[in-house]
Image (cartoon, rainbow, N blue to C red; front, side, top):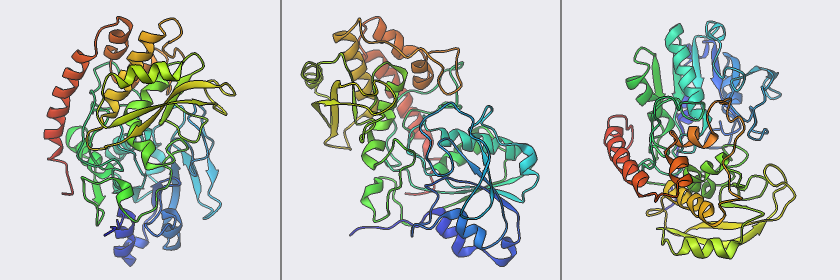
Length: 390
């Protein structure tokens, strides 16, 4: 039988008392901040009174901006008339002065289960500021769309933190955003006044599309759950001169470049016998971003078995294959990335220089995979202390 999830915001609205309705609250939200019946969280809160300020993460309040390095100006929400303050600016942090105007800060964003996603680190900065000012933080929990069990990838080494990873967790961390907040409270912000409003009906070994709830793109380039499934690995392509499919209708599920022979690459990858994935040779033409207007050769990723598919290992294998087949054409992206200008983008995405140096030196990936396995086991054991659901 299809199942239904009541999100944290549903639970909160159902139990919102008249006493709490008089409070002045701020809300961190975007286009995914909806009830399970597809009503905007901020509209519902405004109708009940007390909504004083809105805060938007990367991509803007209605998710209209592509990945960018542009400061978003403050604006006014057309649905409620409430001021929107951007948290994707030169500092990405929340102004303590704004918090002093509030009785509580509410947080309601849909994550995608991967540590590159900047919504996690907007939460991190909100917790930091709330701890400093003594402001209560209420997190409305939402599902991890790629399940709350599987953990994969490496952690972040000292010196490699950035706005795609401010705290050492694996690329795929197997927690909901509410559980992530519980983890940060225990390990980083012990004095923050945190309340997590739990969901009802979510099971941690499930994917979002196993429910009757409607998927809303968490950002412009995660249009479907299938995009989120491959994202923990394929986001690494942002640190290269290869297209990760931005500017197509299937970002992160397709990758390539004008210099790639699709059949040659597919044959190479097929020989690796990677679990849970089939590669289809394809051509595509991005409408924007890398190689806009140019025909790219590449591969389409078809996940055939989610329970065995390893997105991070798969992406690393594709990168190593392209470097081996096209050593003169392949390159790492050298520009500024997420406000970081001192280290290569691939290093801050991976959390160290290990992947870049291994591929550049033509070494096998086995040492990285072995290291990842040890980190995955250690982190997976620790997550049990922060789990709010079975």
